[in-house]
Image (cartoon, rainbow, N blue to C red):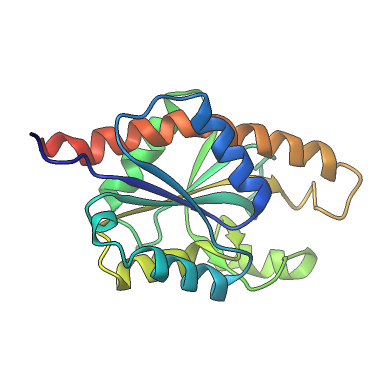
Length: 205
């Protein structure tokens, strides 16, 4: 009997994100265990949930992929674009492989720093974060990745879907439309997530 195939844990914060991911998994085929972990909103909830989940040593052998929605900061971003973090929490090789896998599916992918916030960012605060060089911001990714590293996970990456931008902020009339776009993109990312896991983790067999 062969060695069990390493699992993939996909981490998100919101019920709507978990729903999108589960819809994507239902449409896909995985030959390894896939878990969707919803942490709740904010960095403290994210850290707590990831630490608890990684008490299972089997998860250390697989991948921890944090995902969900984010606010775009860079000029030219649009709702539905994808941001892959390469800000040092994860291996540059894993981040590059994730970007390539997503781009191969025709998605618009940006690579750069995901800033961290404990609240929704708008207006001048968004501009100030952009001035630091960050290309997007969310409330959970950094905490999720710090917790995963602290608990001994070896393969960590982050991919977020832009739900609003300086031109399409959440408080504006287009919120519903941009939310639907981001939901559909997040759902449709799942096959790429599975392919990324297969190509970066499973070749050890």
